[in-house]
Length: 230
Ligand SMILES: NC(=O)c1ccc[n+]([C@@H]2O[C@H](COP(=O)([O-])OP(=O)(O)OC[C@H]3O[C@@H](n4cnc5c(N)ncnc54)[C@H](OP(=O)(O)O)[C@@H]3O)[C@@H](O)[C@H]2O)c1
Image 1 (tube, protein in one colour):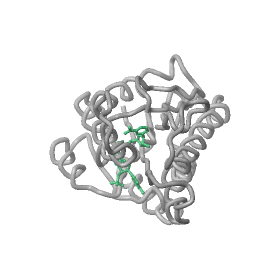
Image 2 (cartoon, rainbow, N blue to C red):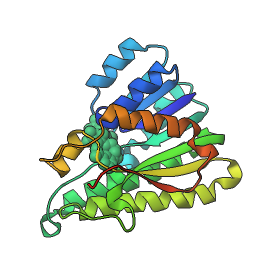
Image 3 (cartoon, helix red, strand yellow):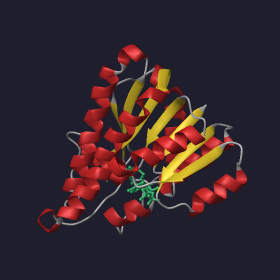
Image 4 (cartoon, rainbow, N blue to C red):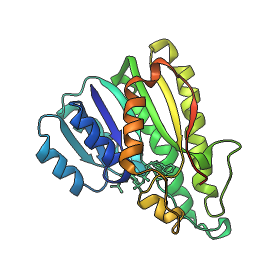
């Protein structure tokens, strides 16, 4: 399958790339940092390509992405995972304007603009998975310092529900996975003294399987994927 992963350079996104490549899929990766991606390109030259792109600045980046997709001879995407995420752990009153718009742009606006741009590449049977957070899951326990991050993830979750409806006739499924704690750099930022029960590789294995097969059982759903609080 041809699978695009947005937010792929480290943590869960990097683990997803490795796993899907091992499973022989063709992976297109988007991220700003490229060291780990260059390594994967050397390892899987026939199956992997990447573009260094700021998903928080999609309005400016869109033409470059279009050009790259054409260069890759991309005509269709079977799966799309919007995994990019940005978190500033700071009390609400101290969040600067930049903190706020950066989180909203990476966690929400980037997904909106990327999905608009990629819609022509998605056909019947394709599956879009957005990576949300338990912080943005209605009714879940909330934590100080994460208000803007959590609200932006809630927006991403609702976007996913709405697009499932809007694209239903075209046969495109859209689901959002609201993740609980996974041991990555982001978790360290949010909960410095906490040890998560799951590794990035373990969560990536679940997401990869869900992205490949989950649309047969779920569409337009926001699914909590969590064994702990946080
Ligand atoms: N870890 C957890 O406990 C946890 C819990 C709930 C939800 N999540 C969600 O799971 C996803 C993966 O999280 P993670 O823990 O693996 O985080 P991470 O280690 O911080 O990785 C975040 C990924 O997002 C990419 N990204 C961030 N800003 C970007 C930008 N402006 N443009 C392009 N890519 C950007 C990063 O790539 P570059 O920096 O190279 O651009 C990186 O590959 C995120 O959406 C996160 O919100 C994680």
